[in-house]
Image (cartoon, rainbow, N blue to C red; front, side, top):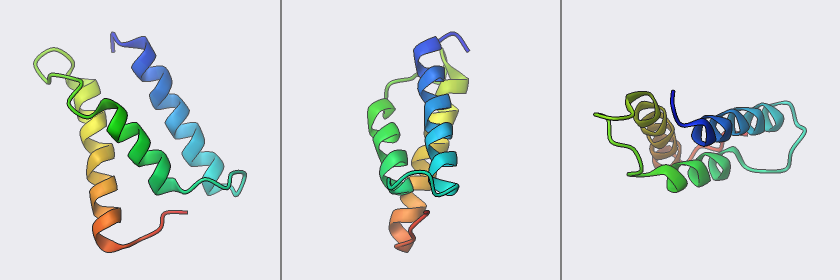
Length: 74
């Protein structure tokens, strides 16, 4: 976990998702996840930053599944 800016953004993503889940935000969960995913897509190499790569891959997987199923996560 050497990329402090990334992990600060990841914590911000989690806080945003918690805010949406508690009804404290009008944002769509899919939009928040997509923005994070688009920001970091292809940014990390798993040979050099495995944890960051896996976190981004997880978020991308969630976005794809939500989009393909037409679900709204809010």
